[in-house]
Image: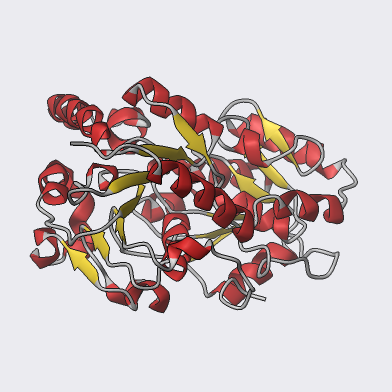
Length: 380
């Protein structure tokens, strides 16, 4: 049963609350957009504000709402090149003139948290992370190109100042993990609540107990995801690896891959679920703020082999639902795979763990956070 078919209980006061939703950009349906989709169902009349909107890449649930975009929407080929427009994002998010409302909910990993709420409204930010490009994963984005890193340095310093300053536009921060809570405190000097993101445990369910003799990576193909680590490790070991996703790293990863590594772009939900059900292990080689994919795999009863830092430490139980490797090297990853081969995994135990991150638990947590936010004094 999919999330759309589940009988979900939304807070009764959401129906009468004048609410605006704000999201960084709408160019695909990844974890952040799945969160927004659930909020769109809970606030069916809420307008959505976002920098750019590729309607063809977004679900009908979100597209059914009035979507307000910034001037960036009018730039030719913006869907391909928007990440290079980072210096324009602060100005673009500040130019919105939102309609009256009681509540703004921003879902943010870049600039949505800096949306200026209308007079009298409270602003709750569901924070995936403080601006990733400015604060974290600097080397992954800029470190391989000395000239690019040199040119980016003053820009990033300015973005950090702006990002810290505009944190005051938020009444209540809600972090997606304890890991992100620490970042919010470090970078913004703000306390936050914590609500784990939702996993569609009604859709991602176990299949047959056997597997088809392959391991699996499902990821955006961007540097900080470290898909290259998995590709190189499996090219060494020779065990079949399926890699699913799109992104700028795709050509480089194909060049690194041995004949046992196969690639596919984003697939329909039915095919993705079947890949989870039929794999041996899910491989999660990057450091993530949270990570929905490992929980989708666990909801299907499959163990996860993950780098032991970041949000994975909150979503995977070492030795019970997966295995951690301590450093991002091919040797460490292949050693963890060998360790996992020796474990007799209980898929019911793995599945029960994933159920703690259900959509209903997310709705209940955000509902409580909204109530807390509405009790706060309005910023002048």
